Every structure is written in C-alpha cells, then in structure tokens.
Length: 293
Image (cartoon, rainbow, N blue to C red):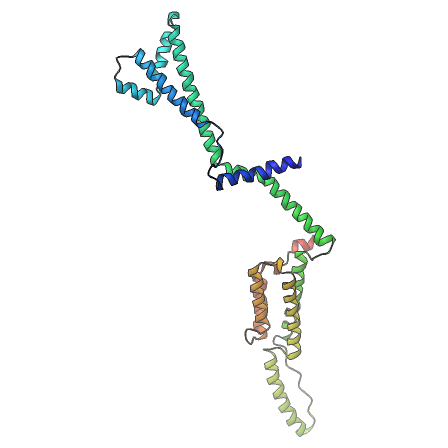
C-alpha cells in the first residue's frame, strides 16, 4: 500500500511534470495522431472516388472542394433513395462504408480534442494528485515537532519563546513607566536661618536633578535596562530560527535604540519605541482566546 501510494501521489506526478517542463518529448499523447491523419486522407479519397463514379458530370473544382471538406451530404441523399430499392444494395453498402469512415474520423477528432484538453490541464491534475502526499508530510512534520519539543524537551515551542520575549519586554516597560516623570522628592525640614538657606540651595539642586531624572534613567536603572535588553537579545539569538530575517533585523534595531546605542534617548522615547514594537510585530500580540481555553 505504501509503495502504491508513493507511486501514485509522488513519483508518477513528479516524473510527468519533469517530462512536460524539462524534456523535448513532453507529455505522451493518448491517441495516435498519425492514425487520425491517415483516416482523413482515406475519407477524402473515398469521397473523390465516389463522386467520380456517381457524378461524372460534376465540375472538377466542385469535386475537389467536396472531397477536401469531407462533405457527405450527397452520399446521405443517395443512400436514402437507394435503400428503397433492393437491387441497389451495393450502392447502399458503399455509402455506409463511407459514412463509417466519416464517423471514425469524428471519433478520432474528439479523442484529439480530449487529449489536448488533458495536456493543458496535466500539471494541474498532477499537482492535485500530489495534494494527499503534501498533507501527509505536513502532518508528519507537525507530529515530529510536537514529539521533538514537547516530549524530549530538545527545544522550546514557538509560543513559549514568544511569551518569554513578551515577558522581558513587559519588565522593560514596567521599569520605564516607573521612571517616566516621577514626582519630585519631598522638601527637607528647615531648622534655623542658616540651615534654611542651605536647604534652599539643596532643594534647588534637587529640583534640577529631578527634572533631569525625569528625562533619562539613572545609572542603576540603566544597568537594569541593559540586563533586560541582553536577555531579549539572547532569546533572539538562541531561537533565531523562530523568527524571519526581517523581524530579527528590525527587533535588534529597536533594542539598540532603547539601549541608547543609536544616540541619547529619553524615557518617553523609549516607551514610544516599546509601543511601536507592540503594534508592529505579530508575535508581540497576545492571543487571548488561547489563554481563556
């Protein structure tokens, strides 16, 4: 059964497509085209001979035209008249033989038309014949990948990789949101005029530092951000087969912009880059239907 399935759905369709596209012989015809040509020539000679004997006074040009056109209208009329008289049986037999040759010619023409129709749709039919084999290969591949990733734990499934990447991006977004325009530090308590003047200068410095910190990350926060970005890059590198080349290039560029490798960026710009990533990449979107199920 397996050999028959492979022969009918793999080897024979592939061989037929190869012969039609890459060989001079092309597709092998079902009918005999030479037999059709011989039948047509024989029918022309039979009509011409019958006309010479039956209608000797007919102009030569008209005889040639009727024989070339294989017109048997006169033969039908004579047969219809001759069949009424038993003594003209030979004429009836001859007319019947010419009609049989005409029918043979029509059958061969129909076979040629069917052959041309089959030839024009040969590739489509062969591709349709290969469909069960393609479906079987896809099914076997999915089963093998399930066994490979789920049972033997040789690798992580694609959805798990995407979820891990989204979790790291979520951590980055949480860090940036907490540092985006935080409230200023509370004013310090003042005791006496000297301390009050000193605290006034300290508060001015704090205000300036707070305004600067609202736009950029501190050294500790920047270190935490770089750790998260390194984790994202590790996921991309270790599971690069799960992403196409365009996605890898674009995500790497976005991570470099967030890290400030393409120039200084503010916290607000970093959040905008994360928002753009969530809108752009399909794997960043969460399938809530699978979570509910």
